[in-house]
Image (tube, rainbow, N blue to C red):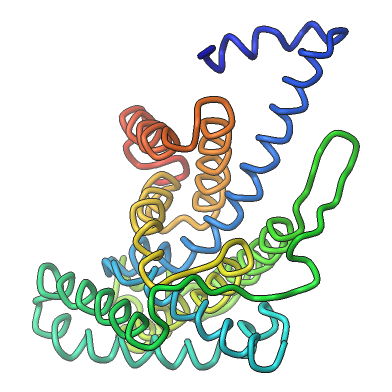
Amino acid sequence: MASFNERAATLPCLGTPACGMSYDLLINAIVAGLLLGGFYVAVTIGLSISFGILDIVNIAHPAFIILGAYVVYIVNSQFGLDPILVAVVMLPVFYALGAGVYQVYFLSFERRGQAALRGLAFFFGLLFVNEVALILVFGVDYRYVTAPYIGPSLRLGPIDFPLRMLIPFLTAMVMFAAIQLFLSRTFIGRAIKAVSQDQLALRLMGADPTRIKRIAFALSIATASIAGALLIIIQPIEPSIGREFIGRAFAICVLGGMGSLPGTIVAGLLLGVVESLTATFHGPSWSPAISFGFLLITLAVRPAGLMGR
């Protein structure tokens, strides 16, 4: 099989049908990768807050995304409401859930200085409890939602924009912009950025570090509501599918730079493009190996990540 570089070498011959097909294939692969990367950003934003800013290794973050997807599935199948609308309505519920989980984590582990290993085991337990509970309730059958934009595509010249990918991409960008504005323009947002750096200074400013951490962690879980809706729009789901995103989410978080939301969006889009090009020109089975190989090479050159300090 010809390599991607060999195919790319034919691109200048624009007068031939084969070259035109290769060029169209390349452009569509890049566009598909950007749309996929937008979904990866939505998956990783919450982890960038909990892991990148708070230093809480929430390995169960994908479990909350799957939980959000199932909530969207239930409401959509029963009442026919739009998946994204359901996710937005459920944001306060997931925020409260995140606040409760952090309170248990703080009282049981962080306050006692046992957050490193036992805290990680706590989140592993949440991950598997959530998966088993969903299997008991819904079984292992794939579930999906219905919406007017699942199926149709928007075509601009030779480029296809599947709406089931375009709508999640746009939603992810809106969520990213809203969280970035909150973190950079509000007192609580700036306190969240400062809480892992200097808690004494934060107390002198009249803010309780524990309360700020609880708000930040709750915000990270609230994003799972939106990410879950985007996931079930893109593809059918089953309870164990969240495991596929654990490695990718942490990889994007580290690649972008710990705690850097702009780095998260750059890393997510970049990883999406790399995976799409690999799947298009070499086959889907190569995508994980190439994408994580790309991560290792990038970190070898820039250990702090793309936009880390």
